[in-house]
Length: 367
Image (cartoon, rainbow, N blue to C red):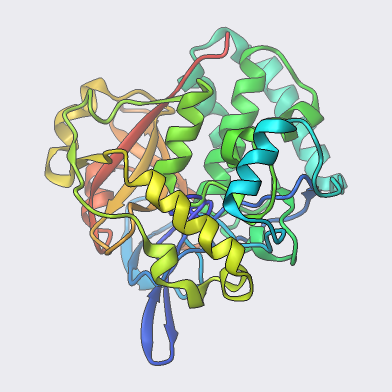
């Protein structure tokens, strides 16, 4: 799961494999390869049984619908070079800037054109003068209606840095909007720097180095990005309570992850990462208490949907969205089909199967 897979931050999905329901898990991509392509991303992950909340175009009607997606949780899974976990860590420590896998940049013209359009919009609206959370909401608005797609990070055999501005899963949407917004805040409108920010957010220590370097579990994604002062986990400040569960969904559902099935080193690497994650406490705000913290939330805060699925931390993610009337909702890449806004945050979470509450992280202003 992006340590989620991108580790778990994905959308709920139902897959039936060998007559058993398998929940989707998220996963980020790894090798120092940058391939900018449309994202049809299935968060990989684990077998997650979940009914996804569907939203109508008017953002009001929510219908429950089953979405099937094979191994995906927030992140997608790709092949990891055959090295042990300890060797992998040693490489990162010894050669932080080295390319252990050929980095390839294959930006699609439509993605670059889309990026330029957003940059022009940011300049015209004087977004650099706004707070980082307001920038995030404004940039997110630019993607409303863009299609939801699964499994984009796992399309190729080797881990590659996938970039897309035309299709998203829930984690890719969060990563993309956050990366663009951080650039806008400091008036950095260079496309390659945007790509670099995606890599920094998606991989352990900010460097792509195979499948296992992707932050699969979203809790791990938050922890790793907090170390680099990209985001701050504010769940505890908001009165969060311990989740009290062992995060081992990926290792316990090894057969759902092709990279782990084929490579023992990759499997052991994930097991070790889960062991490290067990040393930290994951807190969440129970669903029935979400509305009580509305006054402390800000537009652009990252929201991850905490789940009661065994071994998994979260199953979906998006941003707090302030509606025109001031009410707080959620802008997200919805498994129902597109980037959309759920009008009320607590109501949305309460209608997501297996959801128990939310984890909240706040983007740190880079200025």
